[in-house]
Image: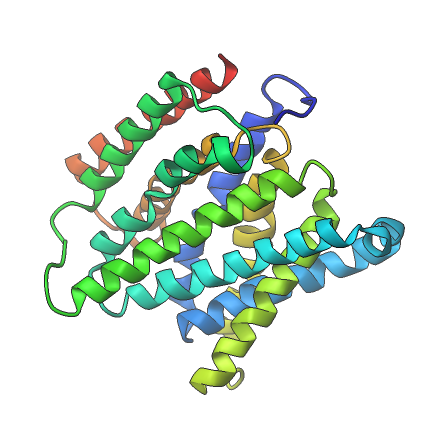
Length: 293
């Protein structure tokens, strides 16, 4: 599947913007004193609410004229996004952060495997090399804090489901973004994700209010920066780049998060993190070159 590109480097630059945006997610989460599922709900819900005036003012005709199949595909992408948030975040309560992060970052592998069957994108050998190299970098960054046995196995399985749901989110977006504009797609997708997460919150009996001003500001920050700037950049790129390359760009998140944690919280930049980050960057560059080939 292909789509005319707005410029040779523009999609890659937008992906870089997306990496910067999504890397702030863990930083904002530190300031939010709420359940991770509640954080994800407000992240998606506020983002959809922000997009609503633009869509209703400038894309009303497209919104109400969507074919049923396209509308359902966008809804499905939102459901997959919500399931990704729910399973991956829940995994953090049962296994170590390192184990969860490494497992969920297998997203590019699953995306590359399924792309030829779902989106019609063929993954080059060079792109595969970039995927593997980047994943090794993630493992190095996360090394030393893996959990084994006991309830950690349940957490690992939840993280794996989180990776699968994220894969389906990207692949569904790759298919439908060719036909649906970014504002309409993100409005429906994020709104659907918020509704699914709201259902989870109601079933779990989690509170939706009573938070501090700092927590509400963190919700807004995640919605504007992590979701609209971060996720929407990825969703924009899905129209012009394969889902595999977009998923590989996700692996840049640990680099951005590590740098931000170093600047804001004074966390140590170890040699392992620097080496892992270098491998991730090298892998992304190789994957980009493979995409152009």
